[in-house]
Amino acid sequence: MRQRLAALRPQQLELIDDSARHAGHAGARSGGGHYRLLIVAEAFAGQPRLRRHRLVHEALGELMQCSIHALSVQALSPQEASSSAGPPV
Image (cartoon, rainbow, N blue to C red; front, side, top):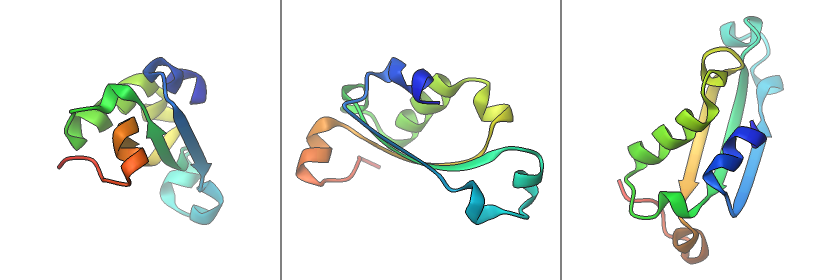
């Protein structure tokens, strides 16, 4: 996942595997993991939240169909990360 997300040239990348917290969940039985992602990249500057999530999903490609069952994404521009402002809606 980290290798694929590198295509977005992140300045910060925090990927947390929450799969163990979802043991017994239908998605966990099929092998898909549950993850939380914080990614800061210039690619998100001026982009609405939906476009940011699409950029992340595109970078992950087929992993979204097989290896990842659930992904919580917080995608920020460097300016937002430094000012603690959230992304535009």
